[in-house]
Image 1 (tube, rainbow, N blue to C red):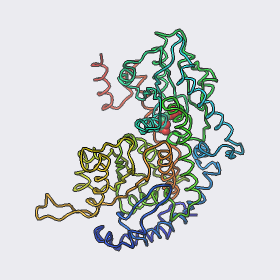
Image 2 (cartoon, rainbow, N blue to C red; image 1 turned 90 degrees about the horizontal axis):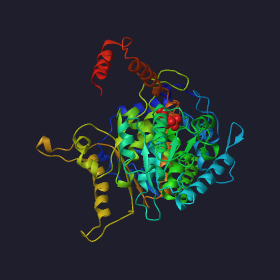
Image 3 (cartoon, protein in one colour; image 1 turned 90 degrees about the vertical axis):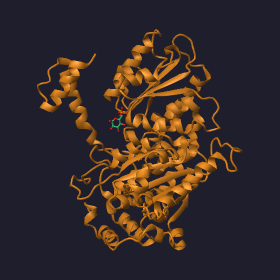
Image 4 (cartoon, protein in one colour; image 1 turned 180 degrees about the horizontal axis):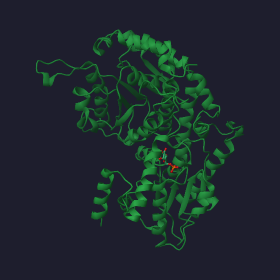
Length: 531
Ligand SMILES: O=P(O)(O)OC[C@H]1O[C@H](O)[C@H](O)[C@@H](O)[C@@H]1O
């Protein structure tokens, strides 16, 4: 198998195809046969990629590249619990979190299913006790507010889910859930506004239980609680893989929700990291549905042929745009306010996974990997950065929408509010692709701007969210498999953390002499001015 994918004949064949020149999208879209071939229906969703700058022939070349780089074998190894995260010597086994009850999930020869299921049962029981009021705080009051403390993968996925399901009509009682992520003391001040320690449950979410921001915030919250309650055992629980550290913090094992260290932070939303806050806020049924949605997408990813495999096609399209067409960015544009934190979650998932520059064996890569991800729900984004998308830089766009709304409003116009939203979902991709000529160059739309559209037949629900997040997780993996990188480590976040510790020592000692003159001048200004 090739080490550096760009040396393979399959890669060179795609380069050669691109070099021949690609017709304008306006022209490509003129072929109904081509358009029909570039539409995929599976898992209750339609993915239309007719507005990508390619033809079915190009797709054939991309599938050949996927096969040559062993995508199927690598996927099977991931699902088999093999240690494919070679630089950290770990399995990549978040799929075990949503496997069916009773299905053996072996990693390192050990079945992970019992731990996954017993933790889910623990979440169900505990969340029900809190929600029903039978679990009371140290002063005898039921706990009505949840403060989830965590950052990165221990924050973005759970927050995405909480926001996504806020208007889901099938959820009865909703508890107040807040997220404290930033070490900025202003975040603590903002998140605790109106909270009463006597009725607050803090959930400390940290896989490693060493993350500086989370530990600092957990200690600040502990102190804040103890100002009003005599002891914290009923007010602080943890989600972590590090039982020794949670015990050291003062949380008994009974109040810890564990998971295996084969679950990477950015892939942990289906673990207790996401499930405990979700169950507390909305009830355990939402978790069960969410996991079933992910399981359904997992099965599709495992069994569908590459040509009709949603994560594979989505991954290959992103890779084509970035590696072969040279587009550095991608915009995620959900036409759904519920998905307000979708781009933020996928940004971490994607950028932390695939922002690498060496192959699995350390060989430097002669091409860029990863895509710069940003986005905003439509139609809000249209009034913000779409000017650039239409007439400025070319950014491949991914539009996501739902056939039904959680809360439609009818009767204001002949069409409903959801219809009005959807008009934009259908119009924008054609405006980008086809453009429009005009004698005034300022009013000219060049078009030829690629996008794809995902239309979910259903509405935003725990199930469809489970599918969607699993789709994007697998898409990231597929891209990494083809690029030949390790999508599952994140060494790039270490250096900044080490330097910050050196700065902390300088602030404590007020000695800034060890830094270069630029940093020293800034630090001295800080020390002189801070109040
Ligand atoms: O869950 P934790 O161990 O606290 O980690 C929280 C986050 O910290 C690190 O900076 C990693 O880059 C993230 O991938 C991780 O999700």
